[in-house]
Length: 265
Image (tube, rainbow, N blue to C red; front, side):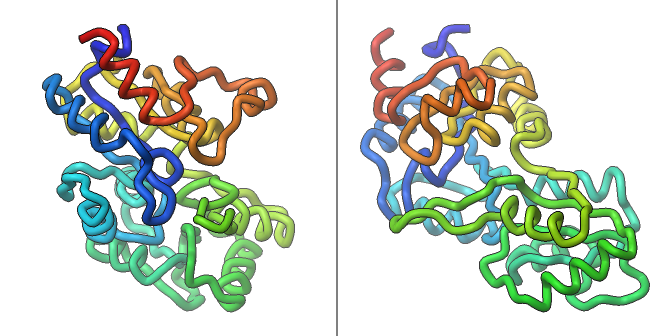
């Protein structure tokens, strides 16, 4: 299906729509154009450190109309996985207080100290990381508990560069214990499947827009939908050759995406 006929736009945020508190040029025009065509957009993020309420406030502050139902996060995908595959698991959570609250609100039994009844280690992007959490994680991994992680992103973009994300911390734990996690968020296809189920659009009507080849674009490819790789964030065109992940379209930014959509009108 041509880009101009797409109805469901699944949008990464950090590095795709904005960087910190700087909204990229063309984003508001693009979002307005999607709605004017009778389409819908959903915001997808691997960042488990914040709740949806935080993102709603941030996007509104940037001038973007957003409601709670406009978001799908790695936390949503993680809760879905836990309830489907580990319905009675007691989880040690290495993540932010916000992450733990979201899990508790969803009915997940969580712990923040090591105990004998823990079945599963759950690692998230933790902006409140302490050495105690790392040590607790190693204790549990050496016991042989199941290990899930919200996302494999190596870094999180900021205005001054990058900071370690969940994937980097998990790599550190892997080096220490020899264990590897099962990642839940992008590039796994679950978030796209949840989005399609939520909106009733067909896969052919959907397109995923993101700035990271190994998470965003790979997620769309794994889910069987078209993708737009924007070069406004972490990713570069060189990544396509090195990672052998092929997006449907490559564009400089969302402003170019908007121009391409308007070319048909």
